[in-house]
Amino acid sequence: MRSVSVIGIGETRMGRFPERSLRDLILEAGGKAIDDAGIGREDIKALFMSNFNAQFLCGQGHIGPLASEVLSLGTIPAIRVEGACASGSLAFRQALIAVASGLYDVVLVGGVEKMTHQATETVTAGIASASDVELEAGLGATFPSIFAMIANRYFHEHGNVRDEMAMCAVQNHENALLNPDAQLQKRITVDQVRNGAPIASPLTIFDCSLVSDGAAFVVLAATDVAKAVSQKRIVEVVGCGQAGDTLTIASKRSLTTFDATVNAARQAYAMAGIKPSAVNFAEVHDCFTITQIINIEDLGFFEKGRGALAVAQGKTAADGVLPINVSGGLKAKGHPIGATGLSQIYEVVTQLRGEGGARQLGNAEIGLTHNIGGTAATCVVSIFRGR
Image 1: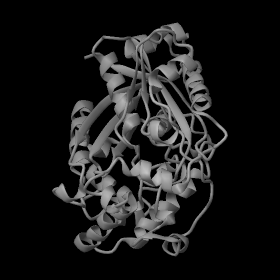
Image 2 (image 1 turned 180 degrees about the vertical axis):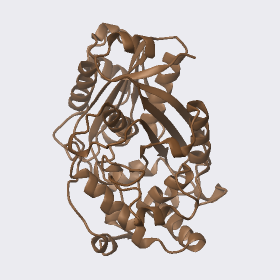
Image 3 (image 1 turned 120 degrees about the horizontal axis):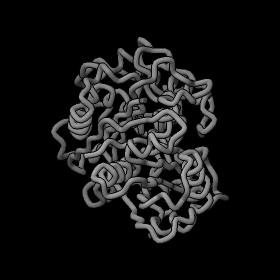
């Protein structure tokens, strides 16, 4: 398998843009990524598009050819990839495999979602389709209620970490203040999180990720091609793993360890030839604050049951030993579902290039992205190194 690198990135700001179309979002983010790569559209040989629910929320299917037309990519193959909230990372992984195998030298990967023009009830119903419709959503379960159960089970096994969950939200909001693409640039406190509007105990509105519109794109190239064409620091994809788990929460082995994350991370670390301790920073899937704590444990950064303490000690803050979600994460940067995994990659590449501006980290050599779909039924973990 060939080495593969990222040579171009682009994204829109994440936010509420009811007046903007899918076409608008694709055109902006895709155009930015192609321009950033410094290549011609004729150099792109395939397009992998991520989208979760445009058919339900926008009435638009066949997203691959739509994006190809908008970006004037001609007759190249274009495919849509869907895996709930992990859709973006799944599209990225498929593109990575295509380039690493030698099938293509340069490909474009994109993700888009438009959600905020619909009523909350409609969006909730759309998102619920990522769970088991017959056994969960059809019986009234929503993702906030499911992750609230996970939080309460975590409390039972490892102690009450309500304050530390709130600290995750506070840290991510603080990080988003320095990110011009972040949807919610608002400083909050632990008390505000704890006392926010109740959603599903112990979760309040401040524990939950955002409903967002947005798009993100990445250009991938064989590393030898990247070295020949790129004028920026090469960012090599050194590891990538994918794993799955049961769709329903009732069938999972554990509610406080996500097996899909553990197994995807194991694959990615093995491929990269590193241990978790070698990672300098990470963008992890914080759909809910409890999820961030579980994820940093499952990724091997901290012992099981000790992730909350690491947050309380400031280890995961932007100036900590292992910055987590310096972009603001899903919690504050935003969660346009089809674009989320690629937006995580956008941030990691930005940091590895030293282009983070006011939020630039001092030690950014190896970065990791972690993206889950549904109740961790799908997970992709990717590792990147600046060269």
